[in-house]
Image (cartoon, rainbow, N blue to C red):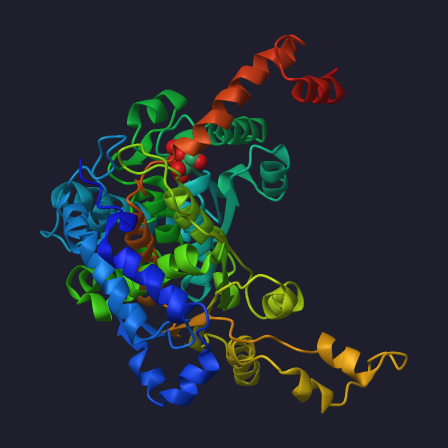
Length: 531
Ligand code: F6P
């Protein structure tokens, strides 16, 4: 198979030369001074999102070469193959069709199946949302990874749209503290458990599902059929567990791409059928943009290309995500799975070891909290870490002054990262808290900021189901873009298997105190913990 890997293209070599001659010494401040139209040239409109890419370490030549790279890797053909349902997840021989989940009725592959489940799920959600009739007040989603992070991220993000009488809880960890702390506050008659698992075999989810069922019965719960619902591809296993109501999906929906499927049931319960359809519609608009916009105006493509430029030429190892919206507090965690489980790979599609780096570490906290924790390192640390600011123009609260302060903080951080502060500037400023015993020159060096640190700013007009759908789909396609250039399979996750298998080996050993054949460290710790 021709894997069309980025490093085998002419453009890759040209980008290397461009980096050596100009990229390494590129200076944002000079670039803005040289080119007054830089903001206009490097800001982009995509459905639901305005993107300012002008504070990135790129110029017209960098982008030209990156587009050549994309063409050399046949990015558009690969995208089209995914959208058409080709089995691009080669190691599992599966299609990758999360886009079909948000295609309008009658469009896209498997439309009848998709809309059949969607209609049934939304009708069910509406029946539960009729709280006077259903008596339900608390929804507990039990799932992990892709069966948790999507709903756990979206429900608080869309808090302004959430049913006022319903409370949402997300239990994922096999750590019993997780479910115990949730159940402590609940009553069986008011609680609906959603058991969310693509496979319905995942250790954590099954353990928590059994704990929930035992709690339900022990606390006088009677109608299991009404209080437990499953979302899974393994309908048989859900039935064996004793669940009567199940909403299914398909093997071509990857876990980390599944919030649009039945896995989104908690979202539908929270925001209702119409809003859930809007979420899908926003994602679909982004799918159309990704499918049809030319490379030079295609936002997920542009961001994916810049990701490759930073990771493989500048050598940046991480990217920080700073959503300046408290509702998006779980966005970094969601993106960690999306990006790192997708692109954290070290062999290409043919199984050859890669001679270049892949997924960066993605991490972050909402602004402004991050500013008072790790932004020090972003400004003055020894590593350059591109930052992605996500700003929302209009809030859903009426504390206008606080919102202005929030947005000003986001803008100021991006400005500070880029502009920095020279030592002579620092020297000319007063620093009232500086030690009097140190010379002003020494203090000024501590108060110098290198600047030229890149950032991207994504702006949504409002955080709505539609704009959030577009934002998340944009991230999915961006991850596709960098993964396609790297020539890897972004849709499997064999890397999580080994630890699971070793855990399954340890459990019977712990029960029988058998450390034979274990490495000394594991054996020693096992005796400490269980001996
Ligand atoms: O961690 C591996 C993984 O397979 C993820 O890809 C997935 O989202 C998660 O486990 C949960 O799997 P399931 O939905 O089958 O319980």
